[in-house]
Image 1 (cartoon, rainbow, N blue to C red):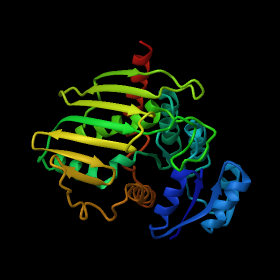
Image 2: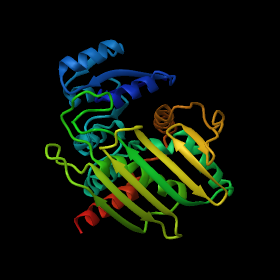
Image 3: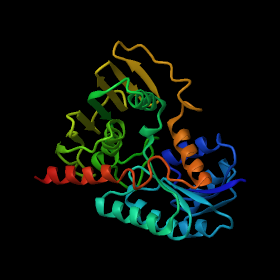
Length: 316
């Protein structure tokens, strides 16, 4: 049976989800909710989506709609996530699901009340590189001793990943650090016990920190050091170094290398080499199988609580 989906938000990540969903059998994107009618029409026509609107409520009212993928600005996630669930629609909210612990808790509560599938877009759980590490941990073949992570962008103006202007500002802590905090929890099975963060000067126009340093330690002593910057004029993205009891591994999105920079074959890890596609496949499978998805809003709540503690450590 075909699953009818709405995409809300059609920026850089929205397009990535359209590309991913096009590879998953049994999905039909029937509506696009955009920032304005003109831009929504252009994307909808390009992707042959029959309905477009500047109002999410119009999409939620489309006959037969099953689910929504939210890739709208971070500040809208909590309210729109609740709106979708209250309308009886399954929802995947791109990372972060909210920009506060209180709003995250609200989403977890609404999911419990409505019983729909509600998933947060924590792509790192699905990248084949990180899955390979996770599978070896579960098999008892690896233990992480330390994670060193670099999240580097060059973003001194308010632009998205495609270099286009946008109306909202990104955030090193509530967006980019969220990936690593949750991945630490996922890979170790522990929640960070000791946390601390420092931030550099705020941008005079964007009003956000442009550089940040974060330290985490789990109860068993696994360390995580995370450096983040919007000032890095060099290779862009997030790079993970896993220092383990048996080997060192470097993850670069969907690729994995050993400590000597030899590439590891990940072709048999999952049905795709694309983390976003695998994330979307999990969302669809959870709906069809009537189960909790990997990276449900409840499962990632500990990461949001740690981000709240990190934010308070900045103030301290």
